[in-house]
Image 1 (cartoon, rainbow, N blue to C red):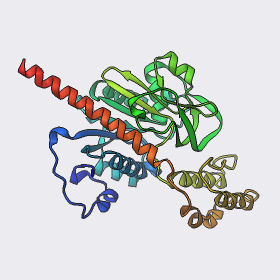
Image 2 (image 1 turned 180 degrees about the horizontal axis):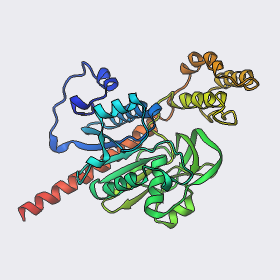
Image 3 (image 1 turned 135 degrees about the vertical axis):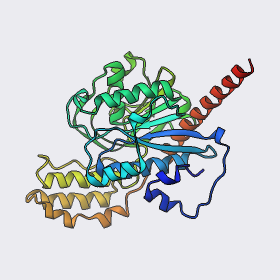
Image 4 (image 1 turned 60 degrees about the vertical axis):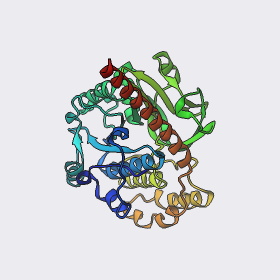
Length: 342
Protein backbone atom coordinates (compact mmCIF):
# COMPACT_ATOMS: atom_id res chain seq x y z
CA UNK A 1 0.00 0.00 0.00
CA UNK A 2 1.38 3.48 -0.85
CA UNK A 3 2.80 5.43 2.07
CA UNK A 4 0.86 8.35 3.49
CA UNK A 5 2.73 11.65 3.95
CA UNK A 6 1.64 15.21 4.47
CA UNK A 7 1.44 16.59 0.89
CA UNK A 8 3.14 19.79 2.05
CA UNK A 9 5.97 17.87 3.73
CA UNK A 10 6.72 15.23 1.11
CA UNK A 11 10.30 15.34 -0.26
CA UNK A 12 10.37 16.19 -3.95
CA UNK A 13 12.09 12.98 -5.11
CA UNK A 14 9.39 10.84 -3.52
CA UNK A 15 6.55 13.11 -4.63
CA UNK A 16 7.79 12.88 -8.23
CA UNK A 17 7.69 9.07 -8.10
CA UNK A 18 4.13 9.08 -6.80
CA UNK A 19 2.61 11.34 -9.48
CA UNK A 20 -0.37 9.60 -11.03
CA UNK A 21 -0.65 6.83 -8.44
CA UNK A 22 -4.02 8.12 -7.23
CA UNK A 23 -5.45 8.78 -3.79
CA UNK A 24 -6.03 5.89 -1.40
CA UNK A 25 -8.78 6.37 1.15
CA UNK A 26 -8.21 4.52 4.42
CA UNK A 27 -9.79 4.47 7.84
CA UNK A 28 -7.62 6.79 9.94
CA UNK A 29 -8.09 4.50 12.94
CA UNK A 30 -6.17 1.74 11.13
CA UNK A 31 -3.23 3.87 9.99
CA UNK A 32 0.15 3.11 11.57
CA UNK A 33 1.94 6.35 12.44
CA UNK A 34 5.71 5.96 12.10
CA UNK A 35 8.30 8.59 13.00
CA UNK A 36 11.36 8.32 10.76
CA UNK A 37 14.16 10.06 12.69
CA UNK A 38 16.81 10.46 10.02
CA UNK A 39 20.16 11.70 11.32
CA UNK A 40 22.38 10.61 8.44
CA UNK A 41 25.09 12.98 7.20
CA UNK A 42 24.37 15.32 4.30
CA UNK A 43 25.68 12.98 1.61
CA UNK A 44 23.29 10.20 2.65
CA UNK A 45 20.35 12.17 4.08
CA UNK A 46 18.01 12.10 1.08
CA UNK A 47 19.10 8.64 -0.10
CA UNK A 48 18.31 7.24 3.35
CA UNK A 49 14.80 8.69 3.49
CA UNK A 50 14.07 7.22 0.04
CA UNK A 51 15.47 3.84 1.06
CA UNK A 52 13.19 3.67 4.08
CA UNK A 53 10.20 4.95 2.08
CA UNK A 54 10.74 2.20 -0.51
CA UNK A 55 11.26 -0.49 2.11
CA UNK A 56 8.20 0.46 4.16
CA UNK A 57 6.00 0.73 1.08
CA UNK A 58 7.16 -2.63 -0.30
CA UNK A 59 6.69 -4.35 3.07
CA UNK A 60 3.42 -2.77 4.22
CA UNK A 61 1.08 -5.07 2.30
CA UNK A 62 -2.45 -4.01 3.24
CA UNK A 63 -1.30 -2.04 6.31
CA UNK A 64 -1.64 1.74 5.80
CA UNK A 65 1.50 3.53 7.02
CA UNK A 66 1.88 7.25 7.60
CA UNK A 67 5.39 8.71 7.90
CA UNK A 68 6.53 11.87 9.66
CA UNK A 69 10.13 13.00 9.27
CA UNK A 70 12.33 14.18 12.14
CA UNK A 71 16.03 14.83 12.71
CA UNK A 72 18.23 15.68 15.68
CA UNK A 73 18.97 19.37 16.19
CA UNK A 74 22.55 20.55 16.28
CA UNK A 75 24.03 18.24 13.62
CA UNK A 76 26.47 19.97 11.29
CA UNK A 77 24.69 20.60 7.99
CA UNK A 78 25.52 22.22 4.69
CA UNK A 79 23.19 24.72 3.05
CA UNK A 80 21.40 22.20 0.79
CA UNK A 81 20.80 19.65 3.56
CA UNK A 82 19.61 22.28 6.03
CA UNK A 83 17.18 23.65 3.44
CA UNK A 84 15.83 20.12 2.90
CA UNK A 85 15.37 19.63 6.64
CA UNK A 86 13.66 22.99 7.03
CA UNK A 87 11.15 22.13 4.30
CA UNK A 88 10.31 18.52 5.11
CA UNK A 89 11.50 17.65 8.65
CA UNK A 90 10.70 18.61 12.21
CA UNK A 91 13.18 18.72 15.07
CA UNK A 92 13.13 15.86 17.56
CA UNK A 93 12.73 18.59 20.19
CA UNK A 94 9.15 18.88 18.87
CA UNK A 95 8.27 15.26 19.71
CA UNK A 96 7.28 16.14 23.26
CA UNK A 97 4.79 13.53 24.46
CA UNK A 98 3.44 12.74 20.99
CA UNK A 99 2.46 9.10 20.54
CA UNK A 100 3.56 7.11 17.50
CA UNK A 101 2.93 3.45 16.78
CA UNK A 102 6.54 2.99 15.76
CA UNK A 103 9.79 4.84 15.16
CA UNK A 104 12.91 4.27 13.08
CA UNK A 105 16.08 6.00 14.26
CA UNK A 106 19.23 6.19 12.16
CA UNK A 107 22.72 7.08 13.27
CA UNK A 108 25.13 9.59 11.80
CA UNK A 109 28.83 9.40 10.97
CA UNK A 110 30.70 9.38 14.31
CA UNK A 111 33.49 11.87 14.92
CA UNK A 112 34.46 10.85 18.47
CA UNK A 113 35.76 7.45 19.68
CA UNK A 114 33.24 7.59 22.54
CA UNK A 115 29.73 8.34 21.32
CA UNK A 116 28.98 10.05 24.64
CA UNK A 117 31.38 12.81 23.57
CA UNK A 118 29.37 13.62 20.46
CA UNK A 119 27.68 17.05 20.71
CA UNK A 120 24.31 15.51 19.83
CA UNK A 121 24.46 12.86 22.59
CA UNK A 122 22.06 14.61 25.03
CA UNK A 123 19.48 15.13 22.26
CA UNK A 124 19.79 11.51 21.14
CA UNK A 125 19.32 10.31 24.72
CA UNK A 126 16.10 12.30 24.97
CA UNK A 127 14.89 10.62 21.76
CA UNK A 128 15.59 7.16 23.20
CA UNK A 129 13.70 8.08 26.37
CA UNK A 130 10.80 9.40 24.28
CA UNK A 131 10.67 6.22 22.18
CA UNK A 132 10.57 3.97 25.25
CA UNK A 133 7.45 5.73 26.50
CA UNK A 134 5.64 6.70 23.32
CA UNK A 135 5.99 3.88 20.76
CA UNK A 136 5.00 0.23 20.60
CA UNK A 137 8.28 -0.58 18.84
CA UNK A 138 11.39 1.29 17.72
CA UNK A 139 13.99 0.28 15.14
CA UNK A 140 17.58 1.40 15.71
CA UNK A 141 19.76 1.29 12.60
CA UNK A 142 23.53 0.62 12.77
CA UNK A 143 25.18 3.45 14.76
CA UNK A 144 21.86 4.20 16.46
CA UNK A 145 21.86 0.58 17.67
CA UNK A 146 25.32 1.08 19.18
CA UNK A 147 24.24 4.35 20.76
CA UNK A 148 21.04 2.79 22.11
CA UNK A 149 22.72 -0.03 24.02
CA UNK A 150 25.39 2.34 25.30
CA UNK A 151 22.77 4.79 26.55
CA UNK A 152 20.45 2.30 28.24
CA UNK A 153 22.86 -0.44 29.37
CA UNK A 154 26.39 0.99 29.18
CA UNK A 155 27.43 -1.55 26.51
CA UNK A 156 30.53 -0.25 24.72
CA UNK A 157 31.04 -0.85 21.02
CA UNK A 158 34.27 -2.63 20.13
CA UNK A 159 36.57 -1.54 17.26
CA UNK A 160 37.12 -3.91 14.35
CA UNK A 161 40.49 -4.53 12.70
CA UNK A 162 39.02 -3.40 9.37
CA UNK A 163 35.74 -1.95 8.20
CA UNK A 164 32.97 -4.56 8.02
CA UNK A 165 31.84 -3.69 4.54
CA UNK A 166 29.72 -5.74 2.17
CA UNK A 167 26.86 -8.24 2.30
CA UNK A 168 27.14 -10.85 5.06
CA UNK A 169 25.09 -13.89 6.05
CA UNK A 170 23.62 -14.41 9.54
CA UNK A 171 21.79 -17.48 10.80
CA UNK A 172 18.66 -17.56 12.94
CA UNK A 173 19.75 -17.71 16.59
CA UNK A 174 16.31 -17.63 18.26
CA UNK A 175 12.68 -17.76 17.19
CA UNK A 176 10.78 -14.49 17.22
CA UNK A 177 7.71 -13.06 15.42
CA UNK A 178 10.03 -10.72 13.49
CA UNK A 179 11.57 -13.77 11.81
CA UNK A 180 8.27 -15.42 10.84
CA UNK A 181 8.54 -16.76 7.30
CA UNK A 182 12.17 -15.59 6.99
CA UNK A 183 14.94 -17.88 5.69
CA UNK A 184 17.18 -19.54 8.27
CA UNK A 185 20.11 -17.50 6.91
CA UNK A 186 19.65 -13.86 5.92
CA UNK A 187 22.20 -11.69 4.10
CA UNK A 188 22.23 -7.96 4.73
CA UNK A 189 24.61 -5.09 3.89
CA UNK A 190 26.94 -3.80 6.60
CA UNK A 191 29.16 -0.74 6.68
CA UNK A 192 30.81 -0.09 10.05
CA UNK A 193 34.09 0.05 11.95
CA UNK A 194 32.74 -1.21 15.29
CA UNK A 195 30.50 -3.89 16.74
CA UNK A 196 28.62 -4.82 19.89
CA UNK A 197 29.15 -8.40 20.98
CA UNK A 198 26.85 -11.23 21.95
CA UNK A 199 28.09 -11.82 25.49
CA UNK A 200 27.64 -8.16 26.46
CA UNK A 201 24.16 -8.06 24.95
CA UNK A 202 22.84 -11.27 26.48
CA UNK A 203 24.20 -10.33 29.91
CA UNK A 204 21.99 -7.21 29.76
CA UNK A 205 18.83 -9.03 28.69
CA UNK A 206 18.96 -8.62 24.91
CA UNK A 207 17.67 -11.48 22.74
CA UNK A 208 19.84 -12.18 19.71
CA UNK A 209 17.82 -13.05 16.61
CA UNK A 210 20.52 -13.51 13.96
CA UNK A 211 24.20 -14.29 14.43
CA UNK A 212 27.24 -15.62 12.56
CA UNK A 213 30.20 -17.48 14.02
CA UNK A 214 32.55 -15.37 11.90
CA UNK A 215 30.68 -12.06 11.65
CA UNK A 216 29.11 -11.77 15.13
CA UNK A 217 25.62 -10.43 15.85
CA UNK A 218 23.29 -8.66 13.46
CA UNK A 219 19.68 -8.35 14.75
CA UNK A 220 18.81 -8.25 18.48
CA UNK A 221 15.83 -7.05 20.51
CA UNK A 222 14.89 -5.94 24.01
CA UNK A 223 11.74 -4.50 25.55
CA UNK A 224 12.40 -1.09 27.08
CA UNK A 225 9.43 0.21 29.05
CA UNK A 226 6.46 0.26 26.65
CA UNK A 227 8.46 -0.38 23.47
CA UNK A 228 10.15 -3.33 21.79
CA UNK A 229 13.51 -2.01 20.60
CA UNK A 230 14.75 -3.75 17.43
CA UNK A 231 18.45 -3.29 16.69
CA UNK A 232 20.15 -3.81 13.33
CA UNK A 233 23.94 -3.67 13.11
CA UNK A 234 23.43 -3.85 9.35
CA UNK A 235 21.34 -1.98 6.79
CA UNK A 236 18.39 -3.92 5.35
CA UNK A 237 17.12 -0.63 3.90
CA UNK A 238 20.13 -0.10 1.60
CA UNK A 239 19.51 0.24 -2.12
CA UNK A 240 21.32 -1.89 -4.69
CA UNK A 241 23.97 0.76 -5.36
CA UNK A 242 24.49 2.12 -1.81
CA UNK A 243 27.58 0.04 -1.04
CA UNK A 244 29.05 1.01 -4.40
CA UNK A 245 28.53 4.70 -3.61
CA UNK A 246 30.18 4.26 -0.20
CA UNK A 247 33.11 2.39 -1.74
CA UNK A 248 33.52 5.16 -4.31
CA UNK A 249 33.42 7.77 -1.51
CA UNK A 250 36.09 5.94 0.50
CA UNK A 251 38.36 5.62 -2.56
CA UNK A 252 37.96 9.35 -3.17
CA UNK A 253 38.94 10.02 0.45
CA UNK A 254 42.08 7.93 -0.08
CA UNK A 255 42.99 9.83 -3.24
CA UNK A 256 42.43 13.10 -1.36
CA UNK A 257 44.76 11.77 1.36
CA UNK A 258 41.93 11.96 3.91
CA UNK A 259 42.55 8.33 4.83
CA UNK A 260 45.92 6.53 4.88
CA UNK A 261 44.96 3.25 3.17
CA UNK A 262 43.06 2.21 0.08
CA UNK A 263 39.66 0.84 1.21
CA UNK A 264 38.92 -2.87 1.14
CA UNK A 265 36.48 -4.05 -1.52
CA UNK A 266 32.97 -4.83 -0.23
CA UNK A 267 32.55 -8.55 0.53
CA UNK A 268 29.86 -10.64 -1.16
CA UNK A 269 28.65 -7.76 -3.31
CA UNK A 270 30.46 -7.56 -6.68
CA UNK A 271 30.45 -10.35 -9.25
CA UNK A 272 33.77 -11.71 -10.58
CA UNK A 273 33.92 -9.28 -13.52
CA UNK A 274 33.26 -6.25 -11.31
CA UNK A 275 35.90 -7.38 -8.80
CA UNK A 276 38.43 -7.60 -11.64
CA UNK A 277 37.50 -4.11 -12.86
CA UNK A 278 37.93 -2.68 -9.36
CA UNK A 279 41.23 -4.50 -8.83
CA UNK A 280 42.55 -2.97 -12.06
CA UNK A 281 41.39 0.49 -11.00
CA UNK A 282 43.13 0.12 -7.65
CA UNK A 283 46.38 -0.96 -9.29
CA UNK A 284 46.19 1.99 -11.67
CA UNK A 285 45.64 4.70 -9.05
CA UNK A 286 47.38 3.44 -5.89
CA UNK A 287 50.86 4.39 -7.02
CA UNK A 288 49.76 7.90 -7.97
CA UNK A 289 46.94 8.88 -5.57
CA UNK A 290 45.32 11.97 -7.10
CA UNK A 291 41.66 12.93 -6.91
CA UNK A 292 41.41 13.46 -10.68
CA UNK A 293 41.67 9.69 -11.13
CA UNK A 294 38.03 9.53 -10.00
CA UNK A 295 37.08 10.83 -13.46
CA UNK A 296 37.89 7.34 -14.79
CA UNK A 297 36.05 5.46 -12.02
CA UNK A 298 34.02 2.72 -13.81
CA UNK A 299 30.56 3.78 -12.58
CA UNK A 300 28.77 2.82 -15.77
CA UNK A 301 30.13 -0.73 -15.73
CA UNK A 302 29.43 -1.35 -12.04
CA UNK A 303 26.01 0.31 -11.68
CA UNK A 304 24.45 -2.06 -14.16
CA UNK A 305 25.73 -5.15 -12.37
CA UNK A 306 25.03 -4.64 -8.65
CA UNK A 307 21.86 -6.28 -7.34
CA UNK A 308 19.72 -5.90 -4.24
CA UNK A 309 19.96 -9.56 -3.25
CA UNK A 310 18.63 -8.82 0.25
CA UNK A 311 15.30 -7.29 -0.86
CA UNK A 312 13.09 -10.28 0.00
CA UNK A 313 14.55 -10.73 3.50
CA UNK A 314 14.44 -6.99 4.23
CA UNK A 315 10.82 -6.66 3.14
CA UNK A 316 9.88 -9.79 5.11
CA UNK A 317 11.37 -8.60 8.38
CA UNK A 318 9.91 -5.11 8.05
CA UNK A 319 6.52 -6.57 7.16
CA UNK A 320 6.67 -8.60 10.37
CA UNK A 321 7.66 -5.45 12.27
CA UNK A 322 4.68 -3.54 10.86
CA UNK A 323 2.36 -6.47 11.70
CA UNK A 324 3.71 -6.54 15.26
CA UNK A 325 3.20 -2.80 15.59
CA UNK A 326 -0.31 -3.01 14.12
CA UNK A 327 -1.22 -5.77 16.59
CA UNK A 328 -0.04 -3.61 19.50
CA UNK A 329 -2.10 -0.72 18.16
CA UNK A 330 -5.18 -2.98 18.09
CA UNK A 331 -4.51 -4.09 21.68
CA UNK A 332 -4.26 -0.50 22.88
CA UNK A 333 -7.45 0.46 21.03
CA UNK A 334 -9.36 -2.49 22.51
CA UNK A 335 -8.17 -1.68 26.03
CA UNK A 336 -9.17 1.95 25.61
CA UNK A 337 -12.63 0.88 24.39
CA UNK A 338 -13.06 -1.45 27.37
CA UNK A 339 -11.94 1.29 29.76
CA UNK A 340 -14.50 3.68 28.29
CA UNK A 341 -17.23 1.03 28.50
CA UNK A 342 -16.28 0.32 32.10
